[in-house]
Length: 177
Ligand code: IMP
Image (cartoon, rainbow, N blue to C red; front, top):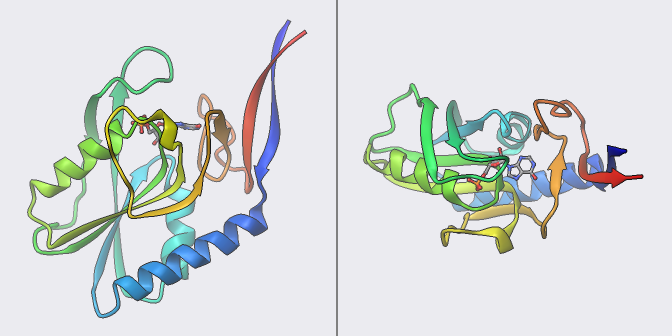
């Protein structure tokens, strides 16, 4: 028999502390600027809402959604924008907020997509970073936590649309009896 179990990886108080640190760093770097924060749906919705409320600089918010078609859970590089940003991007300071950078293919496509609209600046903030799994050399400007391999859920992240609501981050394990 094969089943799934989950084990806590990052408890909620640690998440809150780190989100506040990221928000402070962004607020310092962006002092005097007005920001358009663009959350990447669906996974970033929880992180985005905590981050913008912890920031001390004015920001507007919008969302984008990208789907990566490919086999299994691995990103294929064939990234399609299925919901675009609705607010104007040209000449603005953009903060892209993402749940996790894995191969880097999704964020690379989103950044290229936003760049074509001539923003004044683009910064990327990712809650989690699986640096060792990159297929393209993508670096986020701000990273909450770095992790090695493993599949995580909670705090907006899902496995087959489950577990997004959990306040902590868990790593999922496949148990074989
Ligand atoms: P990338 O294009 O490979 O960087 O994929 C990034 C996307 O894959 C993220 O926005 C997530 O939606 C998804 N993803 C990658 N790793 C995980 C994980 O461990 N848990 C949940 N979603 C993940």
